Image 1 (cartoon, rainbow, N blue to C red):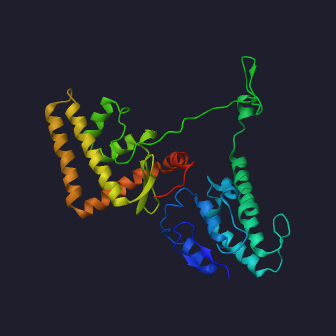
Image 2 (cartoon, one colour):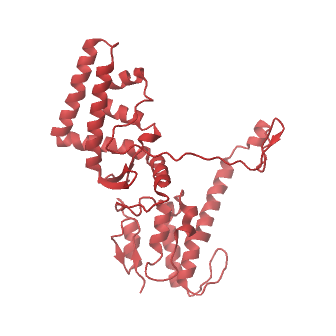
Length: 318
């Protein structure tokens, strides 16, 4: 009997494919656990659709090409239907490439991570080609993929070593060195000072130490070089974030010696009033949590790329 395991939450464990299908089609997706946080949605779909207790299994190398895609996720209902047809059909050959397989599980694995994915990819590329502007014709440019000719210098092998940036630990203050004095003043005199400051802070890659999940109920934060990333409730992430934002805003006001004193006095009162209201009013707290989580979610892709580089040589755990 096949057993399906949802690789997003690892809580759903069922022998019924329909149960898994309903689970993956939930309006509000289940919460990612720490193991799945580094997987793309397509990798999660592929890992979940192959039974966890029967061969053939899927290893991560086989789905490396799915790490930056959402083709399976966006077409999962069609994929579910195709897999159900495989179960109904006695034929064990792939409908796209006609390759024969010894059993249905091998056929399903091939279908999910190879032929069906390639089929969706070709559809996407065809659509892109229709809308694509031919740069070579319009700009009379000729680019050779195997070499770059500049000032009669041709180099076929260019090795670029990129420094892996480690984010600032979440409990520490952010790096605000890239925020100019003028921008600091604009931020603390604005109506949405906390939101505007966080957005500015997150433009610095060193500050991308939070990965907020889509359901915004939890996230992963970079703790330190030893523990790497740990899981935190979104409310705790937001509480910590608001405290640091409040501290930075007050420091901006204190350091500003050029703005009119009455303006700074009013700005300080408003900064602290907003913090007090956040701490005492649950309705305001809920609204602020949503805004802060959305700010983090907007930079989620960049934060995940940094996290993958940080943990690639060690297990991702908490």
